[in-house]
Structure formats: C-alpha cells, structure tokens
Amino acid sequence: MTRPAHPTRTEHDLLGEREVPTDAYWGIHTLRAVENFPITGRVIGQDPHLVRALVDVKQAATLANLELGVLDAERADAIVAACREIADGALHEQFVVDVVQGGAGTSTNMNANEVVANRALELLGHARGDYAHCHPNTHVNASQSTNDVYPTAVNIATRRWIVALCAELERLRDAFAAKAAEFRDVVKMGRTQLQDAVPMTLGQEFATYSVMLTEDLERLRESADLLLEVNLGATAVGTGLNAPVGYADLAVRHLAQITGYDLVSSPDLVEATQDVGQFVHLSGVLKRVAVKLSKVCNDLRLLSSGPRAGLGEIKLPPVQAGSSIMPGKVNPVIPEVVNQVAFQIVGNDVTISMAAEAGQLQLNAFEPVIAQRLSEGARNLTHAVAVLTDRCVTGITTDPTLLRARVENSIGLATALNPRIGYEAATRIATEAALTGASVADLVLAAGLLGREELEELLTPENLTAQKIQTSPTTQETSR
Image 1 (cartoon, rainbow, N blue to C red):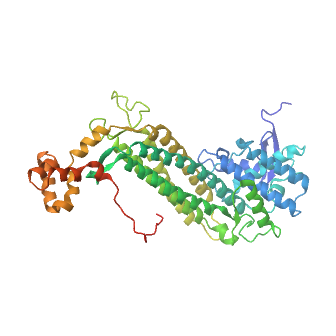
Image 2 (image 1 turned 120 degrees about the horizontal axis):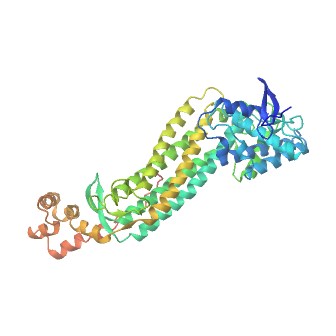
C-alpha cells in the first residue's frame, strides 16, 4: 500500500469532511476560505501587524476567560504561549486566507483560531487536529465572536501602521527643516499661478513643507487615537451573549497591557459593533496627508525641471538613468513614485467610504476591504515617505547665484514700490519692463520716481523677503 505524497488529517465542519495537510497548523475552515477567496493574492500572514493584533486579542481573551473560570489553567497556558510565539513572529506563514473576503472577517478569525489551537495542542503534547483537547472555537474563541475580535484587531493593527507612518513623516519633516536652514539666505522669486510674484527665500519655501508635515502629524495622531476605543466583549451584535459578566472590561484591560496602548471599552457595544466611523475619519486624514505630500512632490518636480529649459531652481539627486533613448536624461522618479502612492490613497478613501456606507443593521460585513485599504495605504505611504527622505530631499542642492540674478531681473520687484509710487505708476513700470527687458530699477530711476539710495533700500532682495507680519496680542492660534 502506497502512502499519499502529502499526508493529511481528516477534519469536519457543518458542510462535511475534508482532508487537511498533516503539517498545516490551519484547519478545515481556513481550507474552505482559501478555496472561496482567491482575490488579491495577498494573505493575512503578509500583514504582520494584523497577525500580531489577532493573537494579542486571543491572548487577552484567554487571560480573561482563565480569571473568570471559563478555561482551565492548562489549556489557557498553552493558548497564551502559542499566542506569544506568533506575536514574536512564528507561524505567520500559516495565516493563508486572502485579506479580502466575504463574511465580515470570519475566515480571518477562524484562521487565527485554528493556528493558535494547533500550536497549543503541540505544546500540550497532542497532535495537530486533536481538537478534543483544545478546540479552535470552543477554547481559543471562548467568549468571543468574529464581530468583536476582528474589529478590535483591525483597530490595533491599523494604529501600528499609523505609528510607523508617523515615524517616517517625522524624519521627512526634519529633512525639510534642515534644508530650510541650509537655504535660508538663498533669495529667489516666489510664484503665484506659475507667474513671478514677489521675492522670498528658498529656505522659506522648504520651511513651509516642514510646517505642513507638523500639522498633518498632529491630525494623524488625533485620528489614530480614535482607534483606542474597542468593542471586545460585544460578541455577535454588542449584547455580550455567551460572554460571562465582567468579561469585556477584563479582556480590554489585558489587551491594553499586552499592546501597551491605552485601550478602552466602548460605552455602547451595540453601536461600536456596527459603526466604522473611526476608519472613515482616519482614511480622510490619510488622504489629506497624501494629497498634500503629492502637492509637495509636484513642487519638487517643477522646481527641478530642466536642467536648462525648465525652472532649474533646485537639483534633485540623480538616482537612475531617465531614458532608454535620450542620453544624459535624469527624471524626478522619487517624487513621481510618491505621487502615485498618493493617487492610490485617494482611491482607497473612496473604497472605504463606500464600504462604510454599505453596512447594514448590526454589522458592517465589509470591514475586510476597509482593513486592507487602510493597511495598504499606510504601508505604501510609509515606504514612499522613507524613500522621499533618503533618496531625494536630503540630497537637494541649488545655485544661489542663478536664483539671485532672476530676482534682480524680475518685474515682480515693482510690487514693492506700490506704497511709495502708487499702483498706477508701478504698473506702468512693470509693463514697460516686461516689454523692453529693462530692469525695474533702471526704469524707476529714468522716470525720476525715486532716488537711487531710496530705491536700492526698497528693492534689496533680503529686505523684500523678511517676514513683517505682526501678531496682535489678542490673536488666538488656531489649528488647521
């Protein structure tokens, strides 16, 4: 009698029996989900934050169940040990269900239950699949439902992604601040609607990007704090059915200790189980960050256009050849890739909005795609921001002499003369300068509108770029 090439064990569910590979830690519920959802090709095991969050929830639930007498110490200890191993990185390859799935995350929860149960069985000295000693649903999922486990895990996993993103945004903010300091004396022309406006410094331009990131970091952290309110203990619809009295608060306290986050139980578990408002809000803020970063990258591409037929005010570090046909061409590929990630996040926000709107009654069945889009967006943006910092912003250079010459030859200098010679006279000077190519200063002197000494004082670029805004003592600072 020949043995099968791949030994299997028999497992059963409400639909019947199936053969599961003997060496698999997942079981029949996971098998069916793998067959049912070949959607994105990306499985939950590829999201380390989600896997860790799932087993953190399982561990917290088990500790609460142990204290309340739902589980005996032997099983509870084995489940907790298995969860800790997985949280530390073990068995992530056993989380094989596609991230986008029907069932409101049930398949993800089942996959976690089975992997934890089978590892716990090994620790107890039993074979995988010997569920009489530790069952995925009866023991690992005790006092729980997918409807409170999965949203809670998604909250925690998403917050971890946002923490990682904030760390990279801080580095980018600091890189722009460093460039602002480096370029603080480099005078250039400011532009509005792509036309010459008034002088400023390149340092002021880069400082704006740093300030913008500071504001966005504040909004992002505020949004991430909304994820600290969880519905663990709600079970199926928020009534806590099948969970013992006191379980919800106890499980959340354990989960807070495990994660290091200041988690709190929602004051209304029925509302929290069906509401995904925190994800809609966070997605909007993530879109805000992406859109503004994309605008910055548009600026970097425009300012570096050339090298001779464009603006050419800054030089981005060359990182690769830009053309298969044009020798010497170098493209702004780093800002371009950040632009594309931003476009993805804008699209993700539409998906998340539609998924949130499609929820019905006591549960939103579409949280898997919400989780997938949030994690994908945060992950991709984290990587894009790191690349923008390290391979672009820190290496930006400029030519101060070129920029100063453009300022001195710009008709935008006429704006500074308005208070002394009036708008009409300044307009005539600016128009004549544009038509003849003569400098604003020469035309003013020729017309006898101002003396040379006064004119030079007014048109000194450094004086034109100094910030002269005074804040009233009664003005209150506002957040934007």
